[in-house]
Amino acid sequence: MLVKLINYYYHINTLNIYILCVILLITFSITVFIGYIIFPILVNLNCKQVERYYYPRSHKKKNNTPTMGGIIINITIMLSIFLWIDYNNIFIQYIIFLLIGYGIIGFIDDYYKIHYNNIQGLSATKKYLWQSILSIIVIICILTNNTENYKLLIIIPFIGYIKIYSWLIFLILSYLVIVGTSNAVNLTDGLDGLAIVPIIFTSTGLLILSFITSSIKLSKYFNVSYINLSSELVVLCIIIIGVSLGFLWFNCYPAKLFMGDVGSLPLGGIIGLISVLIHQESLLLIMGGFFFVETISVIIQVIFFKIVRKRIFLMAPIHHHFELKGYKEQLIVVRVWIICFILLIISLMQLKYYNNG
Image (cartoon, rainbow, N blue to C red):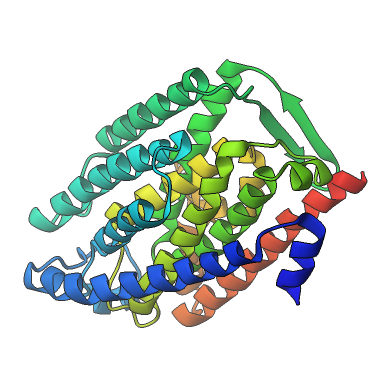
């Protein structure tokens, strides 16, 4: 009934919706299949989670859990892109570039941690440097290779948005969105299933937004920018959701596999980049709000400790604070999922509000 309703009002080919559902199921199946192939390889190579002395004691049981499962995610996304998406689309080329680049950075970081049994891995300076170089290259390409008049939308929740046309502001804030989201997802990936389900919710929101921006009729109705090239991003978001569901097969409590930086860095970077491409950078702050809460908790902890030599949280990121407060891991994770779902609904509600406003 819902499919028929959408088709009636917006003249969407119903077959396309069913195809997207098929892509979702196939991508999920491929992820699980590849996961069962790569999982024993990671075990045999002794790619185990490095023990971190400053983590809660409950995490000691995770030390023998294989990491670098993000390799499964990256392989499946790349394979699915070549199966389902027109990779001549310039937006998809940006995505592929960032996926490979951030994936390499994450792989090197994980490799250093495992090979040298060092929790630091790749130094923070080198990691941020290479992330910055790659993100700036992508942003400059967006500004120079596209005929779109790129703008930044400053969204004030339930009030409206302000359009700012400035390539310099676009470059700076797009950089913060891409690099910030990448590292925010990385920080969130600390409990079983904690990061991957919020990624599913955020990707669902971006899927809806990409779908709206790719339609002249819908973009006009919701008062957002029409972007013809964003139609391929709809399929990409479906792929990310399918891959994430497949990885959750291994990552749900008790996790048999962790994604590591090789998974979290490119996933976060792609989510940030999609929001930039469809002009919804600020809305991502609400939709992926928990990722940024995790980041802010770390920043507050560091600043507060340097100033007064005391910790405001028992441990940061904030999910560890609640662990040390005595909350069970499953309880923390499920409640975060609920919060992320609510944030998704709130962010989508604003689109209609702007139209009525």
